[in-house]
Image (tube, rainbow, N blue to C red; front, side):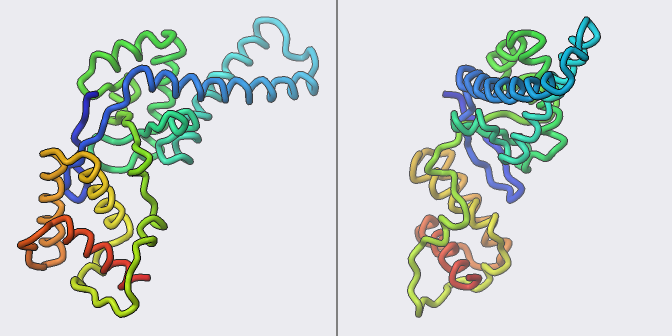
Length: 246
């Protein structure tokens, strides 16, 4: 399965597994079925109210425009509210990410949603299949416009803050690195993700990510780089952060 390296804003390179074409189509199909079901219920209520007012080619054109506009709106809201994971993507364990390491914003999601009409609807998915299958980073037209791609999300790596808070600490635990207060929850989640990925796939890329993260953190906190196990150093930072900030 092809992978992609993304350098985060903390200057750490993380390797992700690109979502294959088949899984992206399944996710789109699930989203489409959800939207069509909601649209069907909506138009039933509209017809009950207006009756035969929407007739002829003009009425059909209005319905078509509303359907396509609704599809764009559904994907936009679904991705924004799901942090890059629409209902279909969540079901298949996929996520939208930016290639520059930043979090996608409304602008990126809007571009992807608009170009979705060209990628899937107007070309019956042929254009999306060609681009995802031929581009180096598995990008459809919407991804190319928004500088994004879609990755697989491993359930064991989908960490949240309360997962970090489950780490056991002693009441009389003495933090080793008080300077860790300079960091924030997002930094801690990034470290935990790095550790999780290294434990799952102990390859050269993830080992290098651990080394880079350690060097950058030591520079940021102005502390001496650990001479021993860097994994234990990062775990200690998480533990210190919890004790000092909870």
